[in-house]
Length: 303
Image: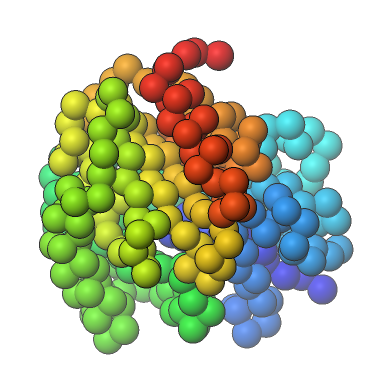
């Protein structure tokens, strides 16, 4: 039995769309299992023969694997599928199945936009006004906080395969969620200013004192704190108060970061790209680990 196992972000949703396109099926025929990287890294995921895993760490037992995160490079050989450091995993899925003749329709625009979004190849206008950029705004409507969002993720998989982006934004649920995003982003800037501390040239946003971490434009901190070369965001897992989530990103607009973030966070049970990544830490000793991470980011040593 084929299942698609991927991550509930824009890249993962486009991966699922491309795999289903290659298989000539819909989510009604081939189910999509939505997982976070930590579920595979910590052995909590059930992976079986036939599974096509994309945009996630390598999972023993899967039949095909696609990924582009530098922290997963050690699994790149001898596995069916495609691994390469690249802007998006969806681009690799598209390349692989086009080469095999299993995708014949043209999704070049979708893949180009996915590359831009997942690799954060954004300019200031895109960061400050995502509502002017339809693919970017759509990507921000994808939340991964609740299983009740699964029907929306599955719906986007079908919409991205079948209709143009302007038509997608006319969908009632998409339009509602995108309106919510615009309002969230409007409020998020003030929240960031209140909960962010600058350590050298690293900005650290800590939402642990809040009952629920706010949603908002994850790129906005690079405009609000232009003197910083990287940003760290800390919050409790929305469903597990014993787990602290740490995300780090390289500034889009100020150069100078030498740290490979994905490799750094692999040492804390996480991973990611050279310029962005995340990890989850047990809350009881999270502060010690967070202090270490901040100091390593401040030291800014090249490997």
